[in-house]
Image (cartoon, rainbow, N blue to C red):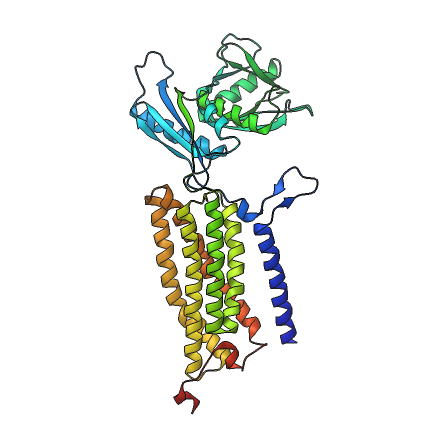
Length: 440
């Protein structure tokens, strides 16, 4: 019964690994859906050296015409603000830095929306929110400087109707939230509608159905001319830039060509496949059935690795990141070698196979943890103090270190537990050998 249970488990795991590998590399059309399935590997974000980058240079000037130039504090705030805008609106592997005293250079991965995003950063849409349909200032006006966050979204154009439109979701800072409560309290008794204007007096949109004071500190600005989510996102960037006290004027715009290219990934993948096969053969020759278990664990590790690389938003793979991932895989093989050598040592001392497995896991724990702790701490330090290429390496190595511990002490341990009912006495299947003294 135990043997049948083990065989069934191995068959199920093999099927799951096969499905996982298919989902990792296959591409196909999804029925009744507009997008194609690209696979885990195809969905991993790639950096400038493998793909290409969208670059732009912006001159930073004060909105206040009385100010001669921007201050160092304003420049630093602008750099951080633009960095956050890129991160929130689809930019990946972003670099924003001071080019000279009054200019900043921005670089992000090239994509379908990266060019429009760069142009949006250089476009200000300064809005005024008021409770009357007039281009003249009123007592309850809320200025753009009170806006703390914007998102493109699709919402109802009124709190009382089922009509929907694309537009901009706006959140206010603490003072803006107080002003918005006062505004909606006024509007609830006078027209039930709030209006959005630009500085030229043009009405941009309106939100009706305000029947009571709104305390959420947020509102929605519907814009009938916007028909897609991407356009809504771009408009949200315009509104965000209009909330700043500086203006960014684009002086340069271009594309950074990849110096490695996408073919580099294919060549690396082929090299990794060859290395995987060679290492698997060596492990099987050296450890027999344990080598097969190691290969199955490595495939589980590979599927999880690719899934995490495309699922985690902080991952953008450069050439150094790929090196970090390969090193993470090597750590898994190293952990298996340490474990299997411990098993061989325990068996050579006269223990049974089952006891050798148990003692080997116990004895190798601290050795493996020492290696992993050093790798994980090193990757954390590189991530926080290194430049962008080292960050990619650090992320790849960190994921590999975590998966190595999981693979050896969860996956491999489970596989060896299933293996014992199949073979707990035949040492030749595991390349085990007693020492001469212990055989006597």
